[in-house]
Length: 516
Image (cartoon, rainbow, N blue to C red; front, side, top):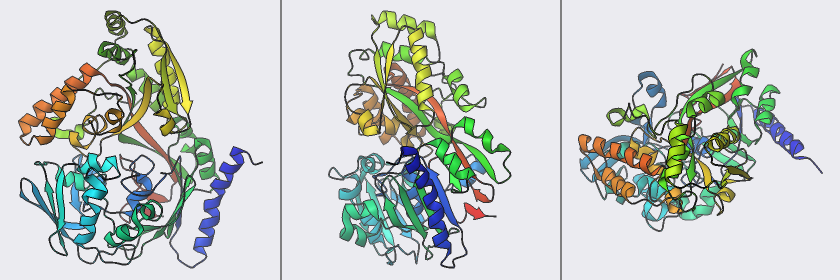
């Protein structure tokens, strides 16, 4: 019987074989072979919102408005540009109208119309109470109606004023699909062979193994630079690195920091480290008798030296994130906030005041999904032990098993999806409709009331006041520990010109990918 390592090695070799076959048909464009740590279980774009899903679906679909990450890297300011829509106009506080670009082709051969956009944003698909994806309600649950006013105009009506509607349409959940395909193939078809307008279309999807994307040469922005993209799941970082060094892959994701030096002196390969708008956290099950007292949760925060932890795992240029906010929030950013800073003496005082009696916390994490999580949790265990909090670590195969009952502490990642608090952090990942609250791990009252007020606010001063109040309430409740902002470390061939954005998109459009 083949060993797990033999199976992984076979998976690593398969893209090279597929690439040779693809070149045999005479298309001069390269085949791009990418190794990732995992693939999404589905390619339905809203259902597959995740660190691993965005890498694929971001190349299959477009949004009405596009976030220009390359411009942001130059200017430091959030930048939106037209995409499938040439214009987005706010007609009144509750109404937005998008004018579609002429001549955009879908992968099924049809021309994009407002009917496709209305079907994409339909209540029963995306945001209504019967919609199958909770992420759709998180992103667009404030919608009241989406209609095709004409063949080229789609109208969005919201239940409350939304100061960030253009950002929403450019971010997670805004990927436009084919109305005809949605009606005919349904959810099952979207999960395995979805149809969008993006530069690449899905030609093969083997769950947990491989996705093959072929160039869509009728793409409205011109022919894509790669003939084909083969994305292969290789769970072990060492195998991904070995595959890159052996020439089986062109780009590999999610390398460990200590693997980067192996590529530094290689004339053909390089490592690229990208600071991400994404944070790893440990969240608490506040229903646990051990964690029901907020003083205990605050103590667990104060017991962790996140500065030392971050430098040990991510290098000397690491910067601690004291609160779930990023400078891109602009005027809302609370620059001087210290957060729940390292203070072991304060941790001990809080534990004593709460009447803490040492009992082991159960920490449960997935195997291999989050880069650097295992060593991070092991360090956290030592720091908690130093203030009198013992713990026991459990490792499970996947996130579904991690979420099952019986653990006190679990991990998650928190993404800042666009440049406003409504785009991530507290207002998404700790929202009452998101998994931490929806599964009952934390059910606050004041925090949710403040969140509702913030969502409805349009005045800049009021938004600033409410945002700081939300940060205060989060720190008082302490439902989680902010471990560190993440860095994505890629390995790639030097002849590939490609920029990785600070979110987990891998954009292989012509403006972001070329071959030397």
